[in-house]
Length: 125
Image 1 (spheres, rainbow, N blue to C red):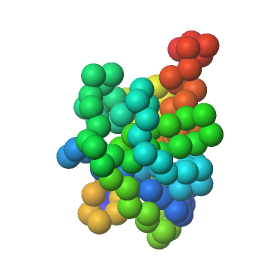
Image 2: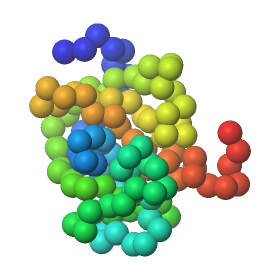
Image 3: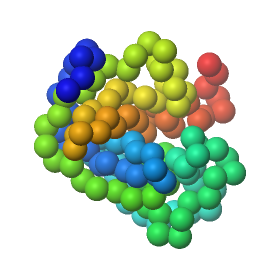
Image 4: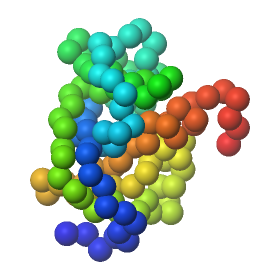
C-alpha cells in the first residue's frame, strides 16, 4: 500500500506490458484494438523511435491516436488513481495521468488523448 495522494477512483483499465515494463490505459480511451501498423509509436524502450515491436504486439487506438504495446489484459476492478508526483508531471509529454496499484505492482496510467496532443507537431511545450 502506498501513501501517495488518491485523486480519483478508476474502473475499467487495460493493463499493458512492454518488455519488462508496464503501463495502463483507461478502457474508455480505447476505441479499438488492432494489428500494429508501420510507423505507429511503440511504447518499448521509453518510446524510443528506434524501438521495434514484437510480431504479436497489439495496437491500441483512440480516434487518431495509436500506441503499440506487447500485451494487453483488461482489468475491470475499481482501483484508486494515485496522483502523479510533481517530478514526473511532464513525463511522456504530460500524458502520465496517475498510477494504480494492482497485483502488488504500481502501474503508470497513460492518457492516450494527452499522448496524442504531446506528439502533435502543432502543440508546443
